[in-house]
Amino acid sequence: MSDDHTHVQEFFGARAADWDRRFPDDGPAYAAAVGELGLRKGDRVLDAGCGTGRALPPLRTAVGPSGLVVGADLTPAMLHSAVRAGRDRDGRLLLTDVAALPLRSRSLDAVFAAGLVAHLPDPAGNLRELARVVRPGGVLALFHPIGRAALAARQGRRITPDDLRAEPNLRPLLAGSGWDMTAYVDEDARFLALAVREG
Ligand SMILES: C[S@@+](CC[C@H](N)C(=O)[O-])C[C@H]1O[C@@H](n2cnc3c(N)ncnc32)[C@H](O)[C@@H]1O
Image 1 (cartoon, helix red, strand yellow):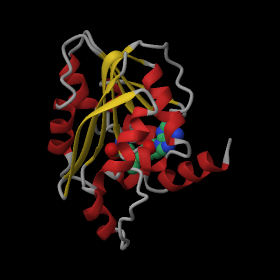
Image 2: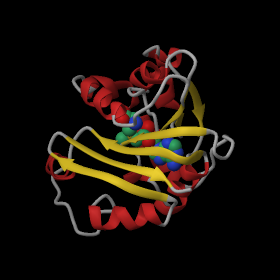
Image 3: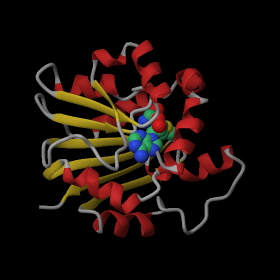
Image 4: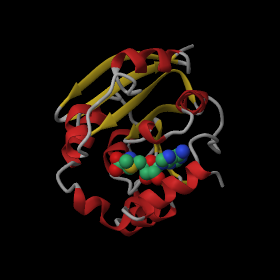
């Protein structure tokens, strides 16, 4: 277990029990972001860094009972909270690092990742691993239910130009990892970047 993993597990492990209570009004924003993936019935989708599984119900609604929904997370306590909330009814939960997914190459239609990229120790390598499991033409959504500036203000800091989610940084990062960025929104109420898996 690396130091990065230990840090993530300690940080989110301490917050897992209260996670959904801290953000009780985010449901519609998650559902709207999932809608942007353009999923169809029967599709196969991964929620990378699923945490307590807040995106799993709208993902299941989008792909229907014949689809596949997988939630992957590194922090056991977050997945325990997901189970307590009954979200394992909407998707299969995997305790795993997104750096090495136990999924076949090109086996998915889409990846949804909320609040994940800023926590990755190797963003380029990890985004490449997400690209590996998605078919060419499949879609990635990097989402946060709050924009970068509003989040920084909430945390008492300023956004800096080296922020990897800034558009001039994110576009080449995605391009170098197998993704073509097709949309970018960073407003107070949400951050959403969409990308398509290159062929
Ligand atoms: C900010 S939380 C967001 C959780 C959830 N997606 C949501 O929107 O409520 C980030 C999550 O990413 C997970 N995470 C961070 N690094 C990870 C990695 N390398 N592999 C898998 N999960 C990771 C954390 O354990 C945590 O649950």
